[in-house]
Amino acid sequence: MTAAYGHVLVGTDGSATASEAVRHAAGVAATFGAKLTVVTAYAPAGSPSGLDEVPDDLRWSVTDSAVATERARDAKHLAVEAGAKDVATVVQEGDPAEVILDTAELRGADVIVVGSKGMTSPKRFLVGSVPNRISHHAPCDVIIVRTVH
Image 1 (cartoon, rainbow, N blue to C red):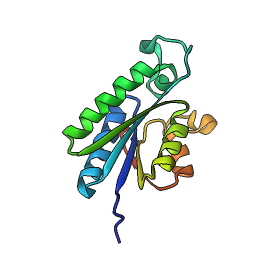
Image 2 (cartoon, rainbow, N blue to C red; image 1 turned 90 degrees about the vertical axis):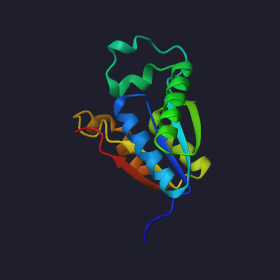
Image 3 (cartoon, rainbow, N blue to C red; image 1 turned 60 degrees about the vertical axis):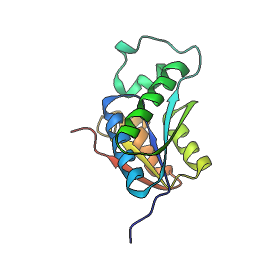
């Protein structure tokens, strides 16, 4: 039996690999006629700036609310272009995995979609990747899109 999803949630940090996850989530939402929520986390006020020097997998930590809002808006446009009809955005301060998990629970998501970025680096064993943490603590199904080839 196949799950019918009424609410799809996807996390994004604005990276190219996260955009792949957004497109995938939009396809899932379009297939099931589901609502899609795009979630972007940002670091607390006073965090350092200088995104050009920051590795992609840590970029969320120096993102402020304005940049995060722009990334969420861009992801919403991408999702609509990919076929999603009902798209909302959530921009919230905090750790990306925690923000995604909390939003999924609060909004009753049926499935969370994330990219696989961060699951292959050696540091995943020390701090855990966002997709790994989500897959272990999600209140619903999780789709991990292979975004690193």
